[in-house]
Image 1 (tube, protein in one colour):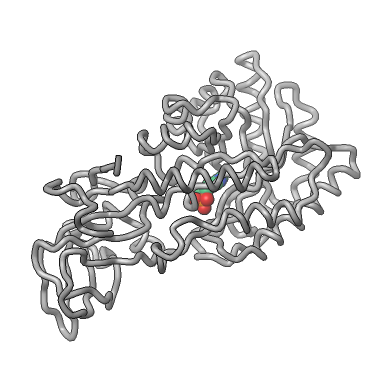
Image 2 (tube, helix red, strand yellow; image 1 turned 180 degrees about the vertical axis):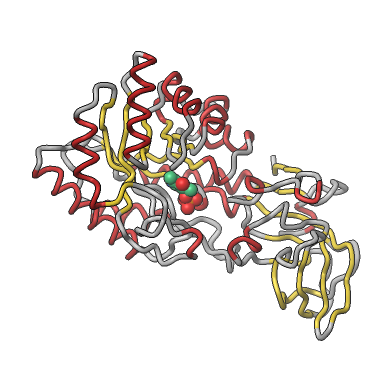
Length: 379
Ligand SMILES: *Cc1c(COP(=O)(O)O)cnc(C)c1O
């Protein structure tokens, strides 16, 4: 990013969103998914900024929500209710009521206990709840262990060995309509063989269901497509072509089955950068610290997942040096990168942390009673 791309004199830190890149990304998502008639939902939790949501809903994507408030946010940003799916291991009664009253497309259910509660609440409201079973397919996403969700040690989904019991129980209930299967095995997955593995497992499960006379109209493969954090310039748009092609090639749908996806990171990550200012450069023992006015409360990923983000000093073209780039928070984990190569850095320089449109602003907190970061849009 060049300094003259940025609005001047705004208080830092702030997220800067490249709306042209978001639009180009959404064009590619639409083109590549519609080749196969796939339905794409945007995973709101990646970034729920209303301005971005308005843009995404305008492109005709559905929404994937993980809380009642996300459902309300999606509706207020013009995602139609019949394009909203709702997952999460801990849906509260109030959230279930809201989703039923709004008549969303589907609950992605994660346990029999939850399914029983949905049935009861639907009965009380005189509704029939459309549900899909989130299955824990025991497919390892080969990603950071905090963001793998589809192996049996994780809390997510219905375990394969429980599937028969759960289906038998659902078919006995009066206020449920079982419409599909759902998977979401993890995030930041760049190896397409992982998704091929998911397709093959889904084929097996569907064959098993077919043998007992069950054919479901929907299947949802969740999200998880990764991006290139190392070099946001080289590949600003994720490889949607390879991703959708993998499912088209390896998944064998039931007749007339609708195929859904829930993408978060791959849609929004590269569109957002965190802009901050250098408060101090401090000499440490055998190292120098660049202390930013942005901290882990603004961008948690490096502290939470040891995530890598490309960092640049856009104010300097002096010789390169190595710095530990840290924030002002009273935690040693408040570090954006160790031994980062930056042009020689001084107080007041602008530092950009790239590719943090996903799980950046959405995870910001007021820890240390700091202000929330601002958000600025390229148009
Ligand atoms: C987080 C999440 C997604 C989106 O994952 P990405 O890796 O950001 O694409 C999709 N579905 C569910 C159920 C999720 O929890």
